[in-house]
Amino acid sequence: MYVLAFDRDWTVDVNPHPRQKAVPLEWVRYWAHETDHEVWAIGNQDLVEEADIPGTVESIRRRDGHIDALGDQDEYGYYEWWPEREKRLQILAELFPDAEGYIVVDDLDLTHVDGWKHYHAWDFLDHIRRGEFEVSVPPSSDLAPDGGFESGDAVRDVLADGYVFELTHRTDDGQKTHLVTHVEPDRPSMTPLKGPPAFWFENVGSNERFSVRLPEIEALHPVPYDSLADPFAEAAFAAVRKQLEDDPASVDEETLRTMLSDAAADAMSVDRREALRLARATLKHREDVRKIAVDATFALLADEPTALDRATLEALHEAATDEPAVLDEHMAQLAGYASQDSMCQAAATRCLMTLAEADPASVLGAIPALEAAATAETEATQSYAVYVLSSIAEQYPEPVSPAIDALIEAIQSEDETIQTNALAALGKIASSYPDAAEPIVDELVTLLDHDAKRVRNNAVGLLADLAQEQPAIVIEYTDRIATRLDDTNIQARVNASIALQRAGEADPAAIQAQKDQLEAALQDPSPDVRANVCTLIGNTNVNMPIEKLEEVKDNDLDDTVRERAAWAISRLR
Image (tube, rainbow, N blue to C red):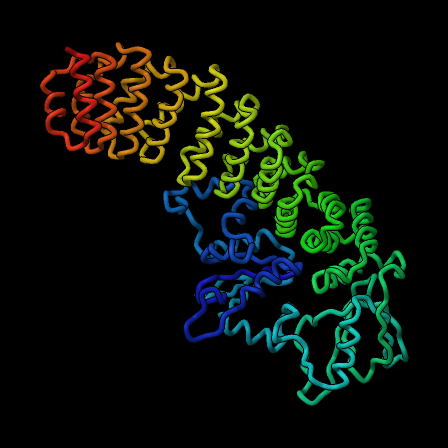
């Protein structure tokens, strides 16, 4: 196993060097998800999402068990501290001390970092082509073994007709017969252009790889899975998966059911990674075996999730989008992953989201896990969790009430969707359960002076909503709410005027003390604020000089404001 660390810009073909070759993103994803190598994003962290690989934040998390060392994120997503590139490589080396080698591909010169082999992207590709690494390339790559010989094509025709083969070939010690699968070579063939092509195989059972040149191949026959002996069934997972990906309909249903059921029943004895890859491919390509693939997936998921586990959970979400019921029996396991600060947290929370959309009651038991996910470091996890909590609160607000603190924290997010869903959930809880509304109001009031205008706006907006149903719990904070009439954000001022208007209907005396701020608000740039304040003054008999209102009635440019001012004057006289 190698540790492969990739920069993004001028290194991977999503942003290649203008005059040099770049490493294909397809290759990075292949090494990360189809091999046992550890593949990490070492530079621009956009590569984390593009290649679906871990990056610097995950390396800190694995090293420390948390990411406190990075500090807080600013409004642009940057952390207070970020390790230098050399330090990032040192952390990876510490995480994987038993790796066969450490390779970093970066446009910056990192040859001085102990223990690491540094390559620019174009040099790295040259070394790959010369076969100097024990790192294979995807079968679709132009570095696959050379074809074009008539006899070579005949062998390839046989290989295209099956996935497990009985191979007979000549060796120096005589004739040998093996049960094999066909594999691409770990490195390109060094055969001269006019020499015979070589084919690579892997022994079923021992996983030993070897190559055979064309003249030595005497017989090659496809072998059906159901005729394999038990010792070979485990190694056939990869072969059947390849067949499933190439031609889904060609794989016998009973074969899939048998293999996946066996894997689920004895997960400790099979090649977990290959069995999990087969389950994932089945989820993607075969609806008729979906339920068994789901059960096998949960039996095979690791206690300490890897990128493969995350990718399989994501495949579960895609499958459950069409058929949510396949996840019903596994809600508790999904909740366990959703509550863990790991690379699988977002994928598991997204699966819970799919269940909640179909039936909110089905995920009531996952509320504690969703509460933890709602305060996760990753925005995607937080977004999914808050959405699920808001979906549940629509019908079952009381069970969601213990998550109030997490929802209040979520409304401070810079993501508008997260804020909206968090506010919706809090509003449902407070509207249905008065006892739960008071602590929500107390917390919202503390946000009225928040630096972020969106947080202030949403806080006073929810106070306005709560005041409509339960004005009594808002009245004592009218002085704090009135300060938002001076807010730099127009919507915050509008929401503040609405909240005061609703509180004033319940207790006019609580509003009368805000005379100075109400008088100033008559000149607010927003006609909505001016109109609301006129209504508020008339409803609560604020001791306002009539001439102030007459000036508004005679000179305001907005018809509604002038009408409200005239009405307020009639109430005060």
